[in-house]
Length: 567
Image 1 (tube, rainbow, N blue to C red):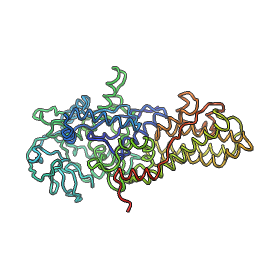
Image 2: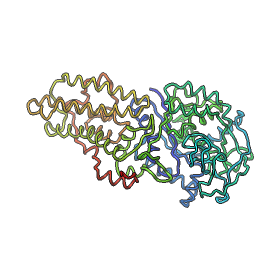
Image 3: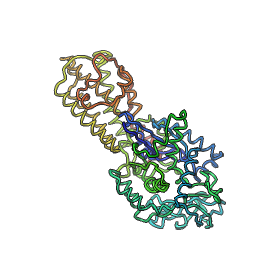
Image 4: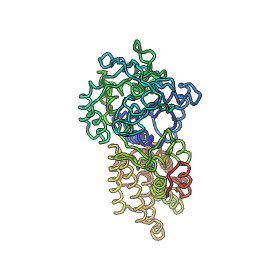
């Protein structure tokens, strides 16, 4: 049994996340965590709300709440929605926690001890109209590198280059839109991460099997020349800087947010009786831990450069990521999902119209791994109807309903397995091995294809054997076919759990098996026989697992969620 530490990029606190956020980090991380747990590994999957920075302050002001009250409400709301999507966090924490404050201050102080923190006076944008310094991301203008006209002052999301707000062409305030800006002097702390560039390059270039997306973005940053980074801001909400002369400043949100991965683990440990959970064993001198991170491509630079540099710079034995799974973007009819413009499908609305498994399956089957992908209601309905309603759901219900009608509520006895069953067993073993291989390699689209192929193989077998015909002339042959099909149903309940956990739980409850037998992962040699669910075991015919999506549904949803005109 191995130990796996899994983290997904922290969702920001200012509002409900959209499906692009879900498929770009939290959902694939959950699929991976669920799979590893089923295989018997020790897994710790942590995440948290990212609660610091100007957006939280402004959102709280708009809501008429203190920032602390706003963040507490939003954390609880997000946690409820993630539970609705069956995300199996071992702990879902908060970056505003005491644990994160203490650890962030420790990292900042430790880097200073190592000579990697420097005080500098910087030119900072001040908005007269807003009567405040503007954080980098709240200065918007044209990127000097690629010409994108809505680049933020911290990073251009078009070309991913790091920016300083004073570099922007024709800058304006993102709060008021005012161009009445001036540059003032302000003293800040800078992390001298440029000193760690050679070590970062060696680390990145020696990673084996990492996605090209991850390594290419990291190397792009290094090749362009790694610059030192300001890690403090003129704000009141955040982790206070424990340094003389900086009492009125806080750490930059992108400095403290990744440290929350460690802090969330400590939060998890602190919830248990003292001594029961050892959070440091996951992070310090943790050579026995496999650490896997999940994130969308805009977060890759911070996880491949800034956070590793922070860890390396302390000269302490903190755990570095063993694998970083980066994702491209999920678009909505070719356009970007947008939280600010409420464009696309948001997680709360998705759960209002369909259960989580519909979304989980579709998103994993279309995960934006090698390139950006695009959501459309037409593709969604077609894939749900074909794969979930027809290939899996209809197979389960027709087998059980027919067997119940002809043989009663127990798995039928009779018949001797022949060549068709032997061929099926071999095919299932091969496809299951592919499914496992893809999950272990964090290849989610391929994993979904292998899972779908298993469901399809069951339907091909059923159509070939045709028990509705066999039962007329050879009831024992029909019993064999149905018993074999029921073993496939049981198998699907086990192996589909990482992707569609709620439906898998329903399938696992069909047969009168003990709890351990319902969820145990199959072994290849046993699987060939397809006889784990023996004759005489009772079963119940479940309700329809997946309803079909009608054209009328698509029309309603297109209008509700602002899909482009079909003209």
